[in-house]
Length: 95
Image (cartoon, rainbow, N blue to C red):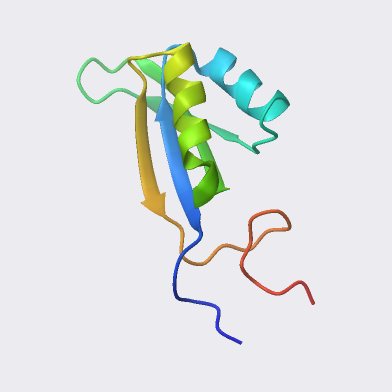
C-alpha cells in the first residue's frame, strides 16, 4: 500500500476576532473538528485564538466561505497535510 502521494488533506490555520462564531459554524453545521490554540500577536502582543483543522481538500471552498462570511478580515493559511492519522480524515489504513 502507498501511504504518501497526492495529498487529499489540507491543514488550516484560522486567525480571527470572530473565532467563536467561526468555530460554532464549522463544528455544528459542517461537522469540522477543530483545535483551539492560544497564541499571541507578533506586532502588538495581543492574545489571539488560532483555530486548527485538517480537512479533505474538497471541503476547502466551504471552509473559506464560512470563515469569510463570519469575518471578511480573517487570516486563513492552508498547508498540505500529506500524512494524517485519524478516523475521519486520516490516510492510514484502519487495521
